[in-house]
Length: 333
Image (cartoon, rainbow, N blue to C red; front, side, top):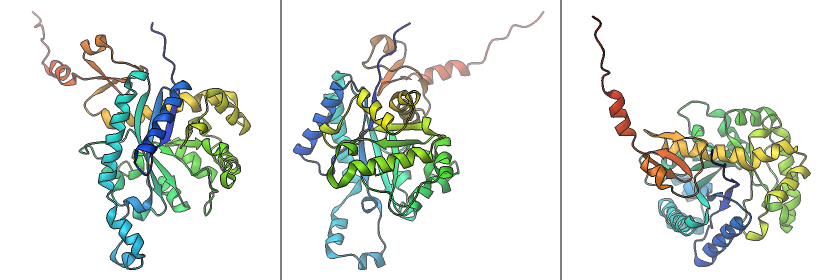
């Protein structure tokens, strides 16, 4: 039996808000640093603020300043997302031969759920040209957090969410986390993300805020702590850390060693698999438990293909035709 390959994940590497050569070079430097730290699966995160997806009413526009109106007219969400996917494809080609699997991710900041409109429908539409592998939300208020608990139907927006994250560099002003709410979220399979990069940033006491916020999250989802993940959220490569350093951070936060591996490997991989199934599983079968770092000609000859590190059966239609053929029955004499 083949030996299982090493896997280490970081599901939150921010995509630059301003796309230029300098910021893209910084992003590439971060990815090169992750390779040196033995990471294998990385998600490039595109963050959307309410101003980026919400269209204000005429009355609200009248109350806006001329500068805000100008920024609203100049910004095009569709063009911005197209730029993201274009740059992602370039990065994917550059790091294809370096055993680093890249995934797409979008994080939607939510202040008032009434402002969401059809943003999640547009992001997850099967007819969309590009779809995100991972969908996360970042609540800015108690209403934003209640969005996950108030949408329980199978057709609700919250069913397509993989990760719940927070702004760990700032205090959770205006809302408090509750045990019942957090445990209910984790029971639905949504992973709660902890971002460690702010602990290395002394600006505005970000490190103290990280400790306070992360301990609050851990305390409120104690029963579901095995469904938490830890990512960097690093905007610079100096904020990245390897496995041993991250385990030291988790130990400092009061977690037990048996939780480390789940937060670093099993839970992130589960999030990736769920996201990929949502995007790629229609009329396809998934061979779970296999991670392929490079394309294997033998797998392709057997009718499989590799999609972002997962083995997917590609000739499903032929197999269905064979199964639909009526079976021959022997007549009894």
